[in-house]
Length: 100
Image (cartoon, rainbow, N blue to C red; front, side):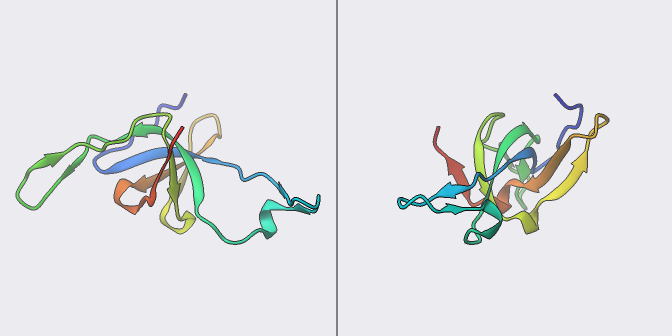
């Protein structure tokens, strides 16, 4: 587990590597050559939440272990002391969650 903690409206996540896919006829399509899609990440930690313009506080309705969909262009990569890669993203930049 990392000691990196997100602040405010940010979440910290790890990416889930996309696997190669096999078509019904047995053709293997490498993940690098498949259609551009949203990336999947697993939530590691959640920030304290958001405030609107009136000062009302809103919690982020995510928790560690949730799987989220995001655009890789919106995430910022960071490394912890052990060299493990994590990503910060504002929860408002997420497209959705994947049911378990």
